[in-house]
Length: 311
Image 1 (cartoon, rainbow, N blue to C red):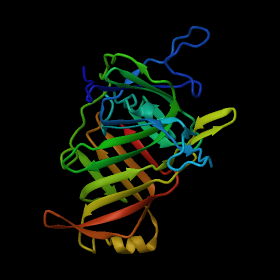
Image 2 (cartoon, one colour):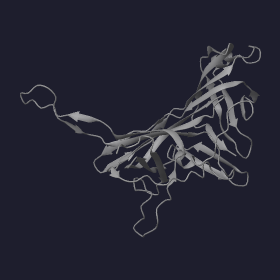
Image 3 (cartoon, helix red, strand yellow):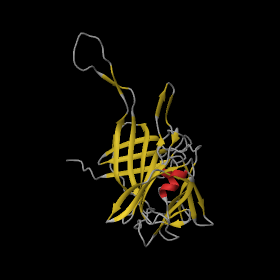
């Protein structure tokens, strides 16, 4: 019987020791992590990523030479909703995913809010199980990067891209997933959303952000690891162009000074957002939205100044 492409489930858990399956009991019989399941879309996997090298013997023959895989790792990508937690005092269900993307997750139960901040010393890693219609792809030691989009009249999303160590592919039935921790997103728009530049409201059409972690797979003699070696966050906003006297984006770009941007969606109690206090404006360009003049402005997000929040 044909395998069904739509029958995909991703399970994940934080590792306590790098590269050791988070779901396997330890040597003392202590149970492993409880598997969490991703409620998302655009699931994709590259089961055998890496480089191959041709042997290229001078053996008197023409044509192709045999090849050897000199790298073997796994990559997985998926998108989750830009939505908060079903308990405002707790992190969103994507919080543990961010711990493997160079971020810390800081819950403040007293204030019923959580912050997801870049931490250059973070070493979190994940075990990911990718179930694909009867086949299980396991990856351990996974680390990655993230990006997000917040377009008006849509619900936005956070895209995760992970690289992990290869484990043999096995046959396995799909589990029964538990999606109870995931919250239905709220539409981005006039009812639920706000966006400010240095405290002044602007008419936001879209916001895109990319943390752009550098995530190489390393293999030496006696060592195999996926590392995060740098990050280069950028963003782009598209806003309705106000009068020049209200917001001169060209002068701001030329000045090269840093600005504070804050985006939020949803009321407190079901709110998710992103902000940075150190954003430089790049070279604006004109655009058009339903006959209205717009600006598209590339942004440089300086160092570790940006954070997500839920409250």
